[in-house]
Structures are given as C-alpha cells and as structure tokens.
Image (cartoon, rainbow, N blue to C red; front, side):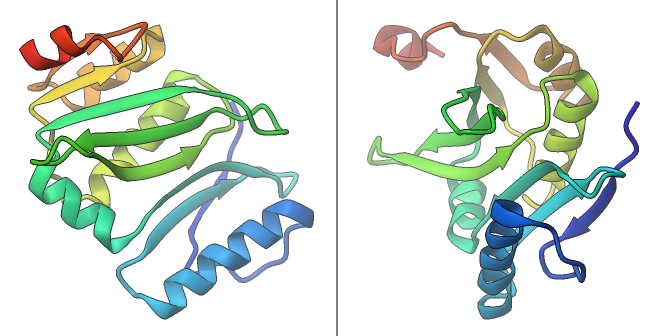
Length: 168
C-alpha cells in the first residue's frame, strides 16, 4: 500500500515538477484569491501527484441547494496521464447541469475512492445525497455503502436514459 502525504492547495510549500507544479500553482492562486475555493491532493513517497480534488465556492452553493441527487462518474480517461477524471454533477431547478467538484485519481481502488468521497463530504459541509447515480465499478459500490450508508444508489452504464433519470 502506498503511503501518501496529503495537503491542501492552501498549505503546500514544496516544488513538484512539470505539469503537476503548474496545476497546483494555478489552484493555489485560486485559493489565495478566494478563501472558499478548496483543493486537496496527495503526494506519494516519490513526490508524485497521487489524487487531486477541487471545488470552487459556486460548486459548494450548488451542492447545498441541488445535491440531493448526485451523479458520480469516473469514466473519463482522456488525459495524457491516463488518470481517471471524476466529475460530481447534478441538475438545478432549470434542469441545467451543475458541477459540484472534480478529481484526478491515481487509480480506481477502494482506498482511492474512499479518500475521494470522504474528501468530497468534508468540503461539502457533510451534506449527504439522498440518491446517487454512478458508473458500475465494484470498488465504488463498496465505498458508497461505507461513506453514504443511508443513500440510495444506482449503477448505470449509460447516464443518458431520460426515462430512468426522471423516475429515479
């Protein structure tokens, strides 16, 4: 098991190389301009980025207002590092998509998803969703049972089924 250092973008004080340093510098700048901006990341013992989660103040307000149904999708791997990109999304009262938070993950293990969902909950004022729509990874099922024991969840292979979304 990898041991990782965990930091927030407001508190990191060492240099990482290349793209990671540029991304963290950008996020640290966002945090310096707005104390309600949040990001958290982990670094492994080789000083490489492990996991990264971020959300802005608007995402928090949207989640407080519209986070009863959470869509949790980690199917995006289009980045050059082949890291899973996780989006936490929902729908507002105008049926427009709202983004509650984003993450880049090291892998798709139980431990990583647990870190992610616990981080998400901590920085979303511990508001738990009533229902969760997610893609079908087994590790996610176990973590959701652990972190959101009272929430209903549905594993979906395709979240574009309007009939199913209306009935959920």
